[in-house]
Image (cartoon, rainbow, N blue to C red; front, side):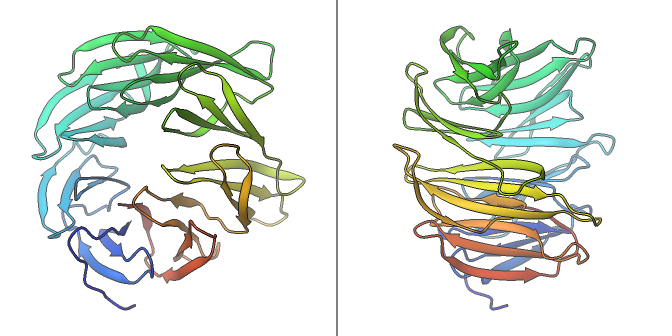
Length: 361
């Protein structure tokens, strides 16, 4: 593979395999650089990025911050080997780490210094969301199966409020979106809450829609929500549905069907994945990548492309994909598709045995 120089402010695709971190050119897939992260012997399972710093988290609980311009390690946080790192989120100078499903450690993102810890052994934490003003935890009480809650903490660890809700959808600085099933109906109720106190701003019922939300995004004044079979566009001011798009499985019969949402200021995409029923030990998947008009949900173009992992960012003109090349081969395939017309720009076979995760700037 050709190695290119990485300029100041250059955007890149980063992936972790074993204990190595690799940066690739987003347009042609050529390698900028590769760095051995010796302080993470088990490799990185979680990556997140903020202001030219890449945070690598290992399942043993250690976190390393790397300046991608210089490739120097800025700091390392050594977690307890008995603690499993489940989730990591960063916003400005705050880095939140979720351990073992019940402990939250909050670090200063620039120094790695531990600021405070929140722990509740009686509850499970399933999801964390971080904004410029607060940390939101979605979880449930271990002794009561129907006792889901959302807990808001300020950036000093002080509890702001707690409300009971079935599912946390997403969080912005202005609004928190949550959902609950409507008993006896194939539908769910979407709520918008104030971040200051958890009070309700509006609620709306979404009828004939499966309640499981797989992905979501807020752009301008529109909330895009993907369930198992629909993409919905919701007006964030009043909860009114603007449009919906229904998806049917690509194969019949199938063993599983999912939709992944990719959205930024100028683009809206969905990747449709259907797992085929097969008679051997492996599963065959069929994919479709759809480019959609944000105002109407109508298709602009569609290509037969997809993979297990898909991501992009507002800074990128491409969508990145990663998946196993063959069921019996330990390597994996990376490729990129143009957002403009769905054209495949490049494809690279990687021979790293233990691909972990990837992110882009």
